[in-house]
Image 1: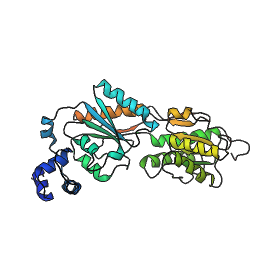
Image 2 (image 1 turned 180 degrees about the vertical axis):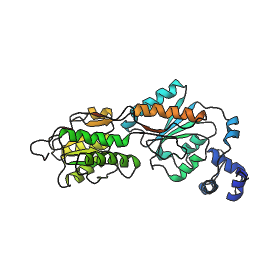
Image 3 (image 1 turned 135 degrees about the vertical axis):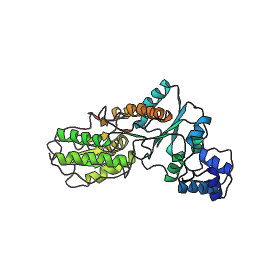
Image 4 (image 1 turned 90 degrees about the vertical axis):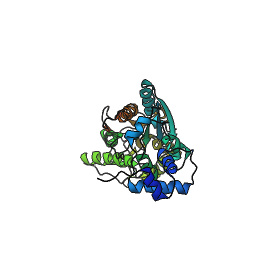
Length: 341
């Protein structure tokens, strides 16, 4: 029978003490070491596929009553409802919530050490989708602390949750088709899985309607992405009469760029963005959106942490209920007489 790899074995291969290996595995910072030493130990851990003895560690471990939520750009208004769902579900269990940004999820950082410190965090809700360095992800997988991935399909242990991004792309496109638009572009996002899924929904809906789907106008994310996307979309031929924007923030950037260019929305161009946020009601014209069940995503994510802590199998997957919902506002309307229909 193959002998289980121990921390002593790791220490011997990495040329360090067992206490150094223990500090890296547990994410503690009281043992001093250079970044080079830490990276060497992490490389050996990954190479041998080291997995801590959870049964033994669980006997020593007491619950901290705290979970961590790590997302990109914590000030993104898209996360508001998700945060509410997380905080409500955590409060119901008597848990506290630590909020962090993925920018601090770097090997050797104090934030990462705090997340992985012995007994300090019971579970991590992480929006990954290719944002976090793979070295850090490999390190997370060696820990006892359960990690639930949000809005992505990357969790090797099956603990992931996502909203229906394909459905969001479909319903946004269907809304514009039902209004009478035939020349519809898709703007925003990048190579992340979320963008791919939403764009796939757009393509499927266009083809089912007998229409020609256009190439993705990939501009990444943010207000500036919407501005760039407008220029690139209007350069397409035939010129689109409507656009689906990958996310609400880029959608607002597109509206601002249209105003600066002297375009009338929705007379010259109808716009709908995926994801809803309060800010969509406070721009002019108001922005049509697709509302996704973000509060439910937050609630389910906390429940998944509880499931992991209880040693039960994952109940992960895509949230189809409630389904994506169009919130029609002032930015979308039927094509005008001067536009092709």
